[in-house]
Length: 103
Image (cartoon, rainbow, N blue to C red; front, side, top):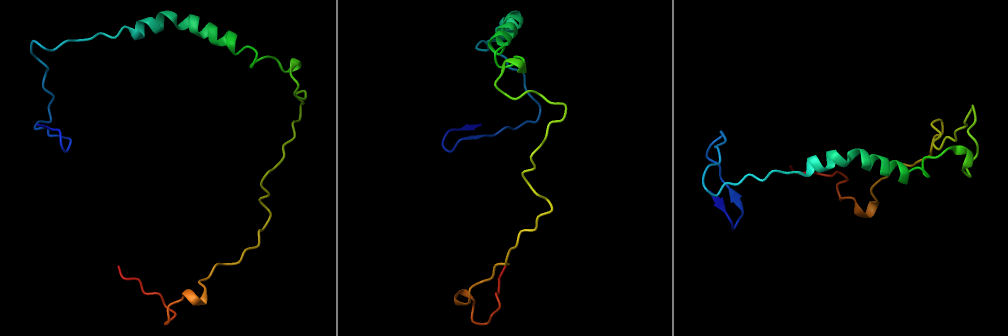
C-alpha cells in the first residue's frame, strides 16, 4: 500500500518479490564503461593541471626545507588560566535558597 497524503509505504512481506510484467524495462548504465575507458586520460589531464601546484620547492617563494624544521606551539599545556566559578545572582535565587526540580 502506498499513501500520498500523508506519504507512507506499507510492506507486507520481508522477502523481496521479483519484478514481472510487460511494463518492466531494464536500463543498462554505460557510464562506468565510458569512465573506465577514459580513466587514464583523465589522470594525465589532472596531473598536467596540478603540475604547477605540486612542483619542486626550489622555484617557490617559500623558505628552503631545512633538516630541522622548527615548530611554534600554539597551546601552552603548562599554563594555568585563572577563572572564577559562576554563581546565580541573588536577585534570581528562589526565596528558600534551594532549587526544587520536579521530574
